Length: 194
Image (cartoon, rainbow, N blue to C red; front, side, top):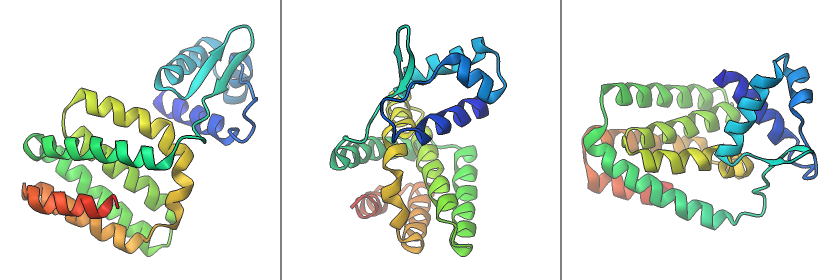
């Protein structure tokens, strides 16, 4: 069901350029071959995530974050990730380390094949895994909201990243976490979020 939810979310975001566009449960059910009740459940979940808003008697519309100041987004992200990583230094487990290592491998493959879209996806999953390693539900929820809304809209800005430099940053972040070296972590995070 999560995969279907993500596909519906991508479909909704693909229509973001038409801000007055409304989505009906009936139409989405037909488009995705689902029962209307399942679509309603997914849309209510997306409403809770801040992706869509319900328009009584009309349908659902996408919440527009295009006007959100990117400097504010980066500032909030920096605070959330710094605090999450600080907690993850003590709380990360072997599963977190393995997941981060695999995501670095995914970034390396994407870099070698010059696949920017795959690189950005692995990058986002890396940061999500870092935040999840904090085991702090408040930080995880804030980051989840940001990734499901604002980051998606502003992802275009990430397409001109220097993949090689970013890959090296992620390797250093991983090594700092694994070695529980807060000084190195603080330095690389400040550099990475410049």
